[in-house]
Image (cartoon, rainbow, N blue to C red; front, side, top):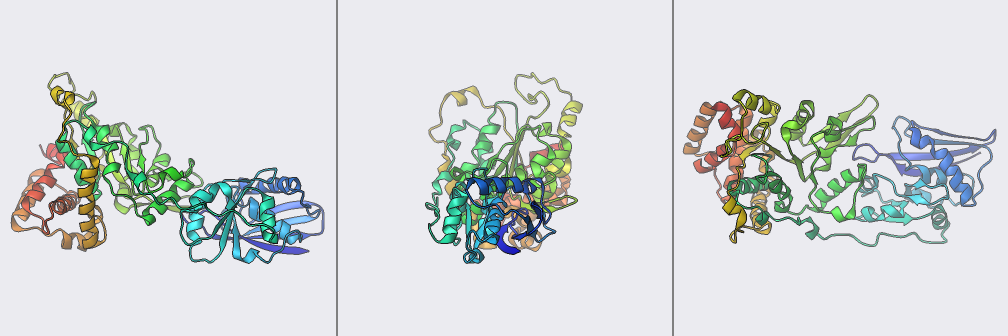
Amino acid sequence: MALATVLSRAAAGLGAPQVFVEAHLSNGLPKFSIVGLPEAAVKESRDRVRAALLSAHFDYPPGRITVNLAPADLPKEGGRFDLPIAIGILAASGQIPTGRLADLEFLGELALDGALREIRGALPVVVALRGEGRRLVLPHGNLGEAGLVRGVDVLGAEHLLEVAAFLRGEAELAAPAGRCDAAASDVSSVDLADVRGQQYAKRALEVAAAGGHGLLLIGPPGTGKTMLAMRLPGLLPPMCEDEALVSAAVHSLSQSGFSLRHWRRRPFRTPHHSTSAAALVGGGSRPRPGEISLAHHGVLFLDELPEFSRHVLEALREPLESGTITLSRAARQAEYPARFQLVAAMNPCQCGWLGDQSGRCRCTSEQVQRYRNRISGPLLERIDMHVEVPAVPKPVLRKPDPTAETSATVRARVVAARERQLGRQGALNNVLQGRALEQRCRLDEPGHALLDTAMERLQLSARSYHRILRLARTIADMAVCESIEAPHIAEAVQLRCLDRQSAA
């Protein structure tokens, strides 16, 4: 009888709880059992590990093999436990020494020939190892993303034989080549100066970028709504290291994985209007991050907003307020971050030409109202700005504007406004609530009078009232004003056109 314990990590949302892989060898009829709440992919490790050990010319124990993945009540999934199971069997059978195992953790999926395959969700494991004092051995394909985390010693291997030689002290494993610290990759390839006209919409886009506010663009087809939305990431400041690590960790858990070329680049997610609720907010029997989590610290663009299913859009209401999404299932629960900036676009009516000078729109007022009612009032209230994007005159389209501001110019003002907010309250204006909102958004008497008049005439709710206060605070920060004045309130009210249209 022999026993060996190897350390590994499971996946639980953005967390990576410790897993003890205990390999026990005993006499008896040949049998390989894995216990500890393994899912189908983990149970299949028996065949992958056996083939890998034989292909690498190790002795496969002839008796009974029992592998326990502790704690037993934590669900285990994926092929990440192949390598620690193989190491545990080799250590328990005396084919490799156990001296180094206490200071190492292992992750990796094995091919049948013993090669190590890249796994999904390696970055959250590396983040969880900070401060633990142990080194992590994982497939060479995961070294790039693992090297993004400071303070963790990560080693990469391409084959099971390399890991065995390292544990015997006969060879060293590869280390990450170096960190990718270039923040310049965050700069978008599209520029705000490419958009002809639309000065009012550009101003709204700058306000949205400065305060992290949500934005709904309303206008006929071809007026530049999508162009404006695509240029918002280029107006945002580069992500700091902590923001970039969280964003990369979420992408590491997704089906497509994380690519190093996206390091420190603001996410820009554009799901199709046929997207399901599970794809948008996350879900599945094993809860995975959805589009709102993949857009964390970035932009979520919903084009043709009324074409989305009603229950899909309603699922956005809680994440827009809390900045997180909790996915609860019968067997497990996962929480993912979802602090995204929502930008949406829609036509003014079903045909799209309401208000056009050509008069081609034939929609009745009932049809227009029915089209707009596809978006619920509570969701609209949670979007800070509703801005009309009218058709651009042909002379403006033909002539380039030499005075048009570039994204770099606007970004400098956005960064300055955000620094004022962070220095004053430690957060952007769009998340101000409660007492902090009262303290930071004090109005002078003309501002109070104007806002009271707007509340009465437009029949605004308390939520809309607070949205206007946050918007006015951002506009005041852009104007380098300590207090909120009446012109800032007036512009904030003007940036919510649907409130005015509903009152009319």
